[in-house]
Length: 170
Ligand code: FEO
Image 1 (cartoon, rainbow, N blue to C red):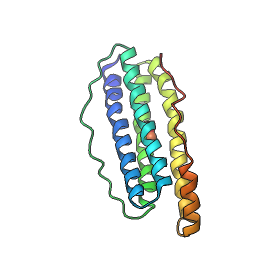
Image 2: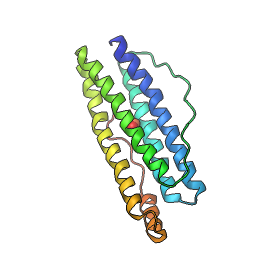
Image 3: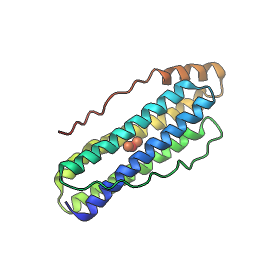
Image 4: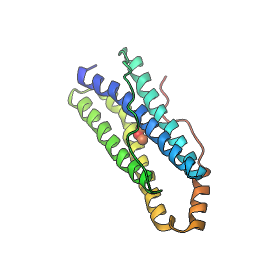
């Protein structure tokens, strides 16, 4: 595997685990506010990020590349309003999309079509994650100021259930 592609993939494991940590911090914020539905949403989001990290970990192993695990940074965002984590999550997903695109471009440049194909799933997943996080902001802006509506939104987010990623590596 090309050195640059390898380094970007290995680093992405860390970025995905950081994402999990960031989402767990958001779950933590909402839990302390008594919004268990929001908290559930972000706990599941954190699990999905761990899945993303494991998929890349497994992909590198499958291609005989060494995985080097680095320290995971402390979640460094501060939240005050109920909208803050939602905005931070959307911004973060846009950032992650740029990282995935960057690896994709590096793989394409060296004709590493296996990695390109592997990353296709992540490209699609990022589209979904950006949409989900943006939709949540819209809902919160529409309904969040009204206690009854916030209660219903919290119930809706509480109904989210975890499902394993649709991408399965051998
Ligand atoms: Fe793994 Fe939310 O991107």
